[in-house]
Image 1 (cartoon, rainbow over the protein chains, first blue to last red):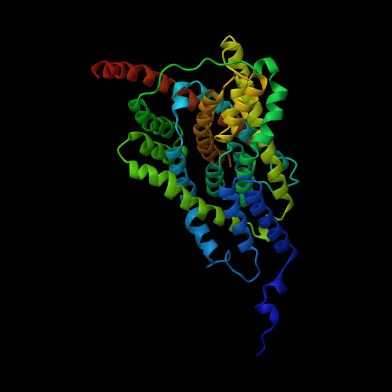
Image 2 (image 1 turned 90 degrees about the vertical axis):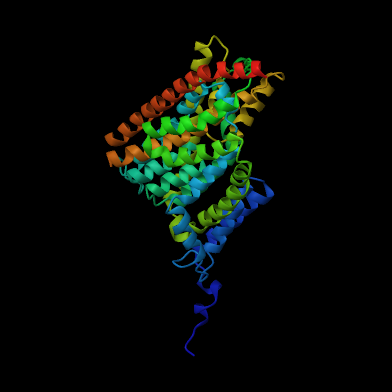
Length: 380
Length: 44
């Protein structure tokens, strides 16, 4: 017959890279199921990783179903945009609309993106050249600091980064690790007295008319000033308009449930399919993960610093900790600040203030992604 | 390296500018829309 066993038995073709990736896929599934770390994402990502690294399976090779999904959903940038419609439908921006000044905390907390981008470029083609990081790769790595999975995928894909898979996995993993990353930084930067500071509650609610106008006006302002952010902010705000307009209940429910769930499944398993051993296992991947932590930390530091400035300028009416929520990891970051506030003062409920900064951070991270996409081609 | 520095500095400046303008618009919107809401309440 002239056929050897190696041509049809997968385990005879198992390389060490594939073996390591199978273990990594297993760990991601374990983290999702046993440790409840972002299970909605890590379970599909882990399973996609396992599928992609089964020798001779061919699911991630040209023509394989994960390759087809990658081509159709990631390379076209459709998946992250569809996810954003769902995210927009899920988010209630009322805490932000009650405290619009928190948008400045969102802006400050994007510093991690640009600080990390600069650092990555210095390590790569910019100066030291110890790693294979081009300007576009560095920008894609920096965008981990957006603390926003869809934005990270979108920017890394548009910039055609070699490290897209590692960037996406890092972004989602660190979002889940916000309760571990942020508290030590916040505690180091804010005294107990500052953490214990109660903030006055905001009187009144936001009218429905204002809630309806908000997504439309935000798209116009951001789109006209930073047009590259239009797909991201447009999807996010479209989802939010469905939520707030009150006349398309079915579409709103579909956006936040069916659409978000289906695309999350497809996106997760496709990202997992991008984690083939030969592409994923290189020294740069480890650096991408280290730089991801740097990005999240810098975000937190910059947000708290502006929070401290507001604390001083407002005559001690703003708790500086809410600056840490300018990071877009919603709602984990708000919960962290609420918990730290209660630890310092059992009567200190900061959740709504923190949620205001957190939802503002969602908008700011999208703008940051658009700004990166605007500037990188100009300076390349 | 200088181009990366420019991207970082300009990037942060543009973000603050865009979001600062959005903040002003939101504050303006809050002032414009509020009186009508109060009127609605009175009508009810």
